[in-house]
Image (cartoon, rainbow over all chains, first blue to last red; front, side, top):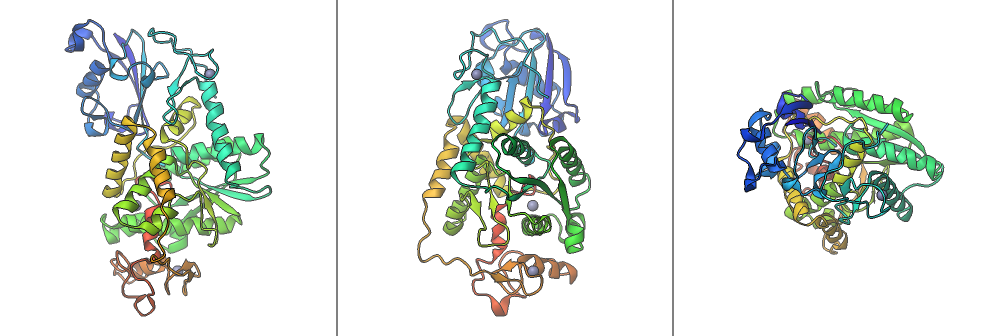
Length: 104
Length: 357
Ligand SMILES: [Zn+2]
Ligand SMILES: [Zn+2]
Ligand SMILES: [Zn+2]
């Protein structure tokens, strides 16, 4: 599945200072949660942690979700409106992560 | 500037904006839990700040106002929104950007580039005051001398004074800073943790320093950080977001994390903490230090020398520990209130990792 992942607000520093990542995430590459064949945000976070985050993962995640203070948008929509970790992802979705914790 | 969201909606039902009932909702407001579209969000976000400005009489027509500009998200959004509101509502203000160049290579020089772009984008004149010019030392040079341990003391003291001096050079009536609701809630908590009840009630004041040289105000006092960042993102505002290379205050970091954890469970917690701070009253036994002026530089001080002069004297004499922690030494003969020297004011400024005064 082709996805565009964007890191901002300082989070890009955790992935080699690259802000935009065009990635191919195959649902079979990961252990999908909930026994469905759908890729959900929870799976994507696990994938990002294993494949994109190069340093200080605790700046990005806390437990199985993003660290409080990291905003997430799926197709420019706040993930709090789409079910957060349970948001289902589709081909060509754009997922944006922005830290609110850096800088004044 | 902002492109209309041509992204495809998520299939999970039509989540409509609860204000206009027409467009697709783009975010959940932490303050009200409403789901709201971009256009309605811009309107309520700006309108709420306008209401705060009007109700608290933050500005008077004809005033010259400096915006403390760090290049970070809060001050960038503040500069953008204030110039919009000033135009739209005829506040009649002369707005300026005021930045402090601490002299931090690879950090402040980059963020100053952002402020310089903001100067052009928003058409606001920019004044930069530097530590090197004011004090003879850059932050890099100070850190070489003092090490990483106490540099937050230096940041807080020097930045506060640098802003006041810059504001005096600009001949402004007031300084507006980008402190947001999350910042204020964090400061309330820190003052509770330090048992500092006098500062606890003062730190929530929307306008401070009315007795000092330049009053300061916080138009974002009730504005959530989440909304500031969402606003900047949707409007594609140009801000700088790299962490300061000098170690931030760890204690403050924990308070921040705690606030963010609370917000996730119950977003209203931030406003409630601010309310708690506001409702504290200073007990009569807590004396506020008397304000005089520094004998050396003329800056406001409750002691013979202001905190910046004490720290500078230490640096210049090669005794950088002078003035850190409890005031001792230089002010000894004249210390009315040793424990409450104005050095502790630095608690009101953000950690150096987030250089937004
Ligand atoms: Zn709407
Ligand atoms: Zn600092
Ligand atoms: Zn002085």
